[in-house]
Figure 1 (tube, rainbow, N blue to C red):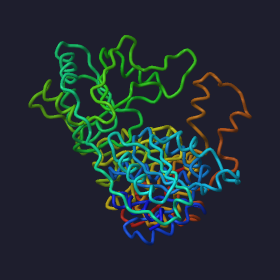
Figure 2 (figure 1 turned 45 degrees about the vertical axis):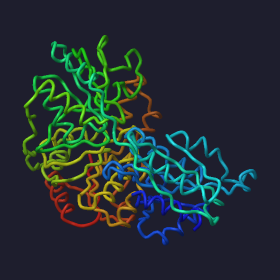
Figure 3 (figure 1 turned 120 degrees about the vertical axis):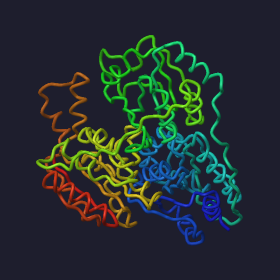
Figure 4 (figure 1 turned 135 degrees about the vertical axis):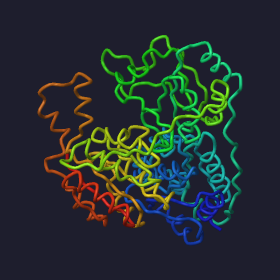
Length: 512
């Protein structure tokens, strides 16, 4: 067995049975090994950002890592943006990235690069096995790191000679440790703050945004304490029958208003909130001045159990309020941000998975789906745009039993539009709603907010996508995805329902 086959057998034996790939010459032995390892599914992406984003979406929905296969330092570099997002989502991923054979390394070949520096920028765990017999153990350790709590992005730099040489063998992946239990004294200290009447608020993220975690939080705040989720959650359970939770605002002034008056901000698997960017004359930290920020659970802790224990201490025997099933009425009239969101909320099927990268145009989608059928919502965790379509690919591969709805802005879509081809190739049940406003609207807002506003026609032209306008329907059809442009709100609702009833992907263009 060569090193490449040892890598794939170790991955599959450790439960990592999907590999999103965009390989090159140095990875050909790993590609060939796919036929020797039937348990491993290979999914081709036409760009590395599709590959890494799909691995992120898969991990968020499967609860276990996928693998990627990438070509040398430059190929890995092309996928860094969505590995950044995956890191912020705390998604475990195992990257296999090829490298030149050892004797070739010092010859400064055209694709030679500082591969250690490139992969280290977004990997929490890195190893470079030099011999075929070292590959299996290295991959097994990577799977354990990517499956741990917290999960890590683990990268194995697989040199070509280690891949093609004989002497490899499948290694056993050791079961990772379960999430840590939160110290009881920490929980009791927070309970005492609540009992003595301090104004306590909660910020939930990560593992606290599951259905049980939200149910426990709903018991805690029955008395009126404010509670929010992170602005861009990796995954949150939403809709009818779930405890509703408000998102912390994107703009700093929104968030500071939401948190105003909070004396103790309790973090449940969430980070101390800060603004996305610095703005002239405005603070970056969002908690009120003098607010005591305390962690109930940290990454790697069992956030669900911590919330449930705290709820039992301060609200024993209570049950939380849950959202009723009350979707918006089916809309009519012209397309705008509200009617588009209403059409989505009115038709959303039960069990849907929503990948949200609609940015400004989709602002009403979250509130108008709060009482829709139960669903999961996946957000742009790290702010590096171009993850919405790839995340939808990965989510659809992970959960082929559920419909995926990708809410996508036209500007963001162009970063990884190749994901449409993978949707068609794999016959994935993904409905893409493309919000076409023909501009980078978020940057128009930010230009004003950072104090760079004014009559700057050359600058403004860099934020416009209408010269020439992008024909999203033609693009989608060119990638093999059926597509249609919605004429009005009623037509959009019809198109959505038709897509949900039809196997395979669909793109619906909505022009604003």
